[in-house]
View 1 (cartoon, rainbow, N blue to C red):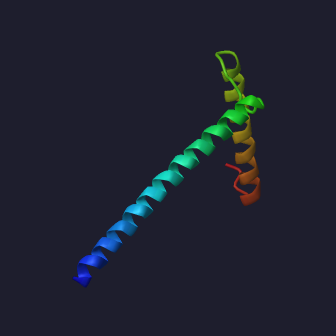
View 2 (view 1 turned 90 degrees about the vertical axis):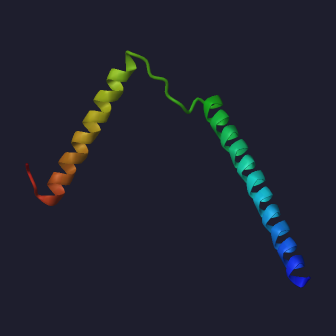
View 3 (view 1 turned 60 degrees about the vertical axis):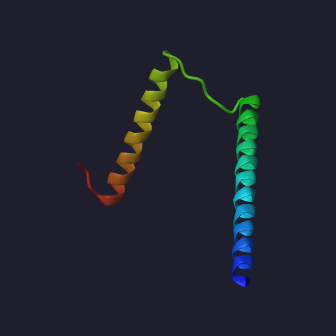
Length: 79
């Protein structure tokens, strides 16, 4: 009889842990949504269109080239 009680107790504990984890996940999702909304409200996002995407690509390419040059200068590999 003692084994059945232990199993029931463990089963109940596991269920509570699962429920707490689900509630925590839901709370984290809510916090993430609030942070995303706050970033948008503060204007901390960038919209790109067919005009600005070209500039974004160019800037990204230039940063990549600079990083590559810095790595080559650091290692002494001028290829």
